[in-house]
Image 1 (cartoon, rainbow, N blue to C red):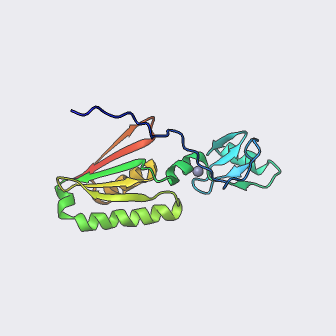
Image 2: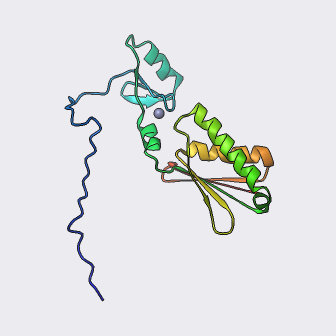
Image 3: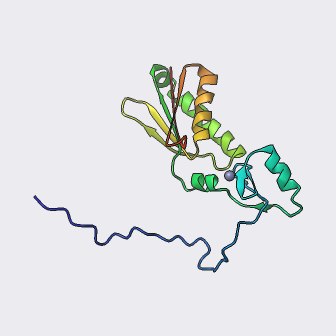
Length: 171
Ligand SMILES: [Zn+2]
């Protein structure tokens, strides 16, 4: 039996330099700002979707900066945040049609919210389908689209402080 070697070569810190080495003074982010990904505005040091925040941004008397908000950054990083699980006999019998509906819905969602994307389509053991999405919203939207089109059962599960959504649809 071999003993496990310590991970002497592993470095746990990783610096990502988004500015290509350009020095940047430490100061509060510019405000007001607008996120093109989700429409949030940044005022009084917070990102918000509230109408009141938009009004504050509009009345700030300064040009609004366009900047991607932290949650959209997270979505853009490509880590999945939504999972749509599809199975059941109806799916097996109408698989092509259902997949086409999901693809169409993904295209529509992406047109409205550029950060909503399907990351992967996987066929599970047992002939189910798993679609992973960049945002929890897109997984929910796909589940609702299936229910609207075909009825069936729709279940929502959220984990990690609602940052991950699992959606199950079957009929
Ligand atoms: Zn955003």
